[in-house]
Length: 449
Image (tube, rainbow, N blue to C red; front, side, top):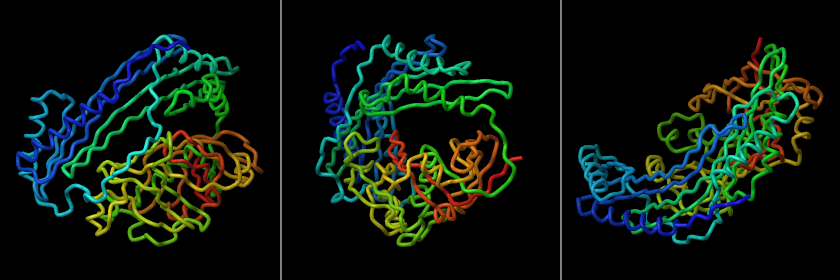
């Protein structure tokens, strides 16, 4: 594949953002702010969409962001701009200071503690620009789509997408901290359609990587999307019943997302979580473990520091089924009388301990029950733990997929789902910063016809 070599200006961009951030902080302090922090970024991307062999869109982006937060004691003000010229920056400073002067005091507000700032900045191998020519991106999109459309039974396409992206960012604050990051994210995807006498079905597949050399084959993505689409033909509804449920890895990740929401600072200090006061308590089976590992090379969520400059460290979240800590930035930590866990802005790479069973083994362990490959709707309450979502997937009998199902609802309480987790598969989905295999839940209510 031919490439156009584009000069790498990332270091110059980082220098410019860092200088601008430091100067802005000095000017904010001169305007009376007791503390200040700046987040600045430049994002560059190429996105190409192809449908039925024809180019639908070609989009090049270069987005800039600059946000300032100032503190006048316990009073906080924030403002942002996408324009980095001096007049716009000065207007941003003036707006942030004006807002702070009219807000109420909040003793929990302010920068993270100075002694928590990162001081070591190892290279995490996150910078791999993909100098992709537009014509080659179009050809790659066609290759993906053609491979899927070539599979017998595929009747149409929603198109293929090729995305190459890179970002440089700086976080700086009045502690004297200046943190620089640069990273790349690239993705390939395709969505296909199949039809028979019973109707139409649509499904997709994608891959997401830091380095374009890590992609699965373009044709493999197309064929995988085709297989998934064809497998949905002839989908049925189920009668209402209770049965074990196996969540495919990409769906199991959402169950972990609900857990993260329930143990995150905002939900906790508002006491709007079903896991308030659960540190040190058993919430999952004794074999279950989650570790956060922010410094993994090429990790989707790797970072040396969080959104407040706090150094990230390897840290367990759940050990032997027992919740070890919450997920906190400095504000929520102060509200709770605790310390930041280095999670301002979210979690980094989470690794769920897996069992020995691959996907086929997990189907055998399921026996007879429901395999969920897609969930929809917003029927999850972090306050109560009640879980009710639309779903589709496959009915499984004696460890073998029997037929596809759709238009069903699965329901339970998250507290029970976590406590009654039977196994986690070794079929880990590595396209995200949350790495987990499939989850087998002992029993849920399935509502259909």
